[in-house]
Length: 162
Image (cartoon, rainbow, N blue to C red; front, side, top):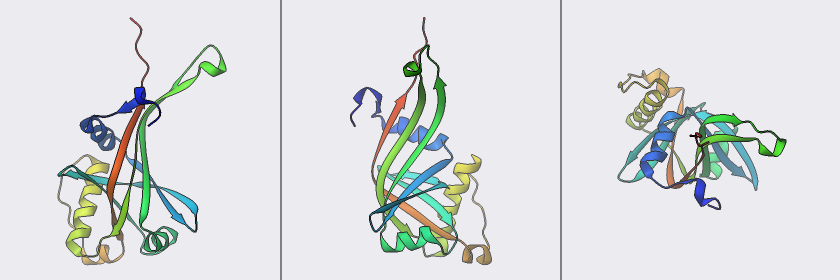
């Protein structure tokens, strides 16, 4: 990271940002062309490994791309706020963000899908409830996870003047 003064190095601070945000931009690639899609997500962090969970339709561009190339990147951000200045070049933005890289795996088993969907529901609702999903519901949704290999955090926060 070029701007070490903005880097978030504490993993717990990075996980707080991931827990607070609601939308993840997933970056995929096909034939050297990037494709970015915003998705709701869930996550787990076990044994120092971050896993992101997503869901979507059983078919479409995103799934086709994942099946051809499961390398992916992601970006999550929140706490954005305009910093006003006297001159245009004095303006800026407060933010907190996470960027990472990893591999996408499509979840096949009923139990894997249910676990992934429960992580999603926990993230989106803030409720740690084990939801039930019918066979019919599970048969109409693709659930996939991103096994994150590396992720970094960055922030810009205005200091309060004394």
